[in-house]
Image 1 (spheres, rainbow, N blue to C red):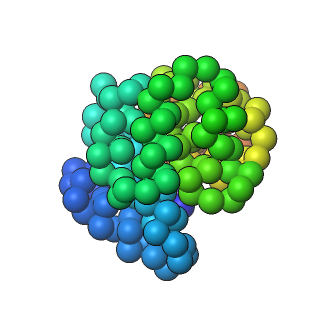
Image 2: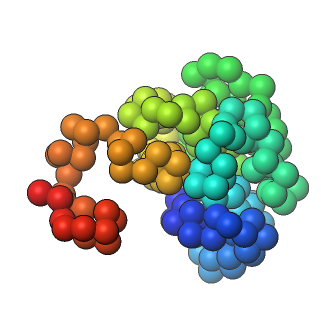
Length: 173
């Protein structure tokens, strides 16, 4: 859930996205599936920035291609066939607090709600589970894709001001 900015930052170099995501996850996740989950999420963030026409199955295929073999990758490949809200039951919602139970579902949401930040967030938290992690992953990927203008205006109005560096100008009040 912390790797989205890394993927967005290195979006012009997918090899580097994979290397940096793995290096960042090895410090916090002592399991190869945790590293694979970080790689998958970082690659999705990089694609969100660099290839905005890629969503749905094409997004999932591209992420799976960069994800090391294992349960996370298998879940992403399974997510390609999911068509409805039952995806959380099949893929997981983070309740098991593991990357294979979190990353595939989050990527499914990002792939199926590429233009609707609010709907994606509501669909994510409605499944329960580890909603702070799944919400952070989904929200991060879609914010990287849509930018500030793609976030619900009412949500922006109700949060603290964004720092000046976000917009390159003065703080929003």
